[in-house]
Image (cartoon, rainbow, N blue to C red):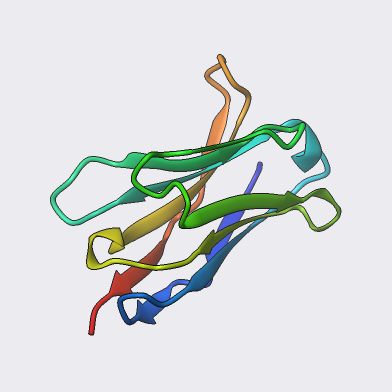
Length: 117
């Protein structure tokens, strides 16, 4: 059973930076696509960024130019570097491991990011 563990969340001031990490168990990390999603209070979960097994990235318009997704297959870890944080970035951030166009997906339990002065 795949397990995903997010870390790196916390309280940060507007304009600040955080880096989230998601560590995956198992030996097949490199063949999965990975994604970061977020859910703000009272809102639907939404995509923040994805990265394919080959390293192609996609970032939502709301975070483009501020957030960067990356992966380290040797460490079974995906990262989300978040710069120029805004109060509207406040959310629980979830990591997803998946095969595109299939029903195969795994989710972490999330890490809370709060952007506030």
